[in-house]
Length: 243
Image (cartoon, rainbow, N blue to C red; front, top):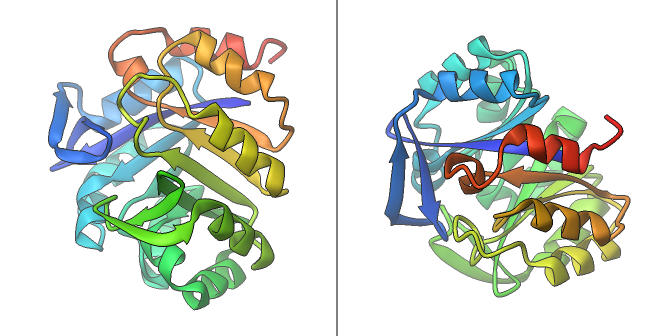
């Protein structure tokens, strides 16, 4: 299970939100590209980057900062937030992103998701953001009637390879991941699943690994790293003891 440090961008700054609430933000002083460089120096082979303004506004808003990150680090980068057209996908992949994370439009428009997967294949990751088991969209401001599990099965049917499952109630709260939801979801699909939301301790990482889901291939870690709950090097040793 690969530990993946997160960089969330708002107005060109590195921030963390509490449960996706834009009014509950904490700004961190380091520039985004310097944050990425430090993660890489600590051993990160993959970095998760989110354009929060883009997720809320429906189009890329922090592309300049993301470009600086991509130029500064050799780590593989996945980019999400406000990516709702094939042109947006091509733009970020052309910039050097290894993967693009689709959220809102992929959740609401199966035709777009099908077309994206046909055009870009395994470079597409679908972000499934859930509140009480239901998919949330538009920067987590709207909750649909679609179950997260149903969306995951749809992604699998359409040929997707990877999903990121985020429990919104846990995100930024440092309360531990939703182990039951992650275990249930990863047990119902053959997709690669990346868990996100709530990791606060190395014990949380051990608990995820204890689920023994072979398709649980990664975990995104955000606030715990920024608040120095543990170091990325420790997370890597915990998750990849033989790596």
